[in-house]
Image (cartoon, rainbow, N blue to C red; front, side, top):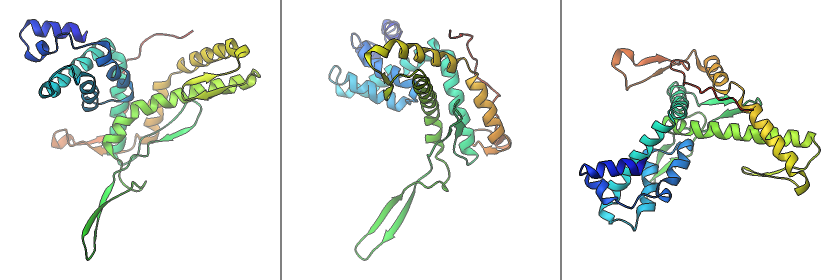
Length: 261
């Protein structure tokens, strides 16, 4: 889709699109596409693409070309995966509201394990001596206000990771009940060769069980119960509307009807 749009732009005389003729490959966009679900920003995506393009185009064109490509990647993803992007935006917006209400974002996994995002603002402290003055960054402290930018950007990937870890723990528990060995390294699941088929079955069964749960509805209910009485100040709104109540179902992301079996 990115290359198709580039070709259309080039046909209309777009200089950057013309300069990118033959330069956009799967390798150029792969990292950005794969890390979008983990919250990669426009800036981070541009740097990823610039790294892939470096050497194939002149350095003085690198910034403009990478900015063009990352914009087209994000546009194509939003067009192709509108509902997934809608969920990601809702997760980020929810974390932003909670953070602006001066609370760190938190939730509970489907296994009942609490998660709290430990991103708080850091402060500089000036220390004067007879020789010189020093500015030191003070490490974060839970008593400091939340870092809204980090809270917002980290919510989608952290929530996905919490679901992945839930699936891993469910697989481990049911493997133990089945009497087979189980080892996990990150997202790689291992067992003895004679138990692979059993582990594969358990892995798939627990994935289906987990993702047939109303995960987002449960999250919204938790957030309403935990933070629904809080208010936050949104300076992006006109003055008379800046004080807002934390609401997590308005709007609520559209969820597809796919059922796992």
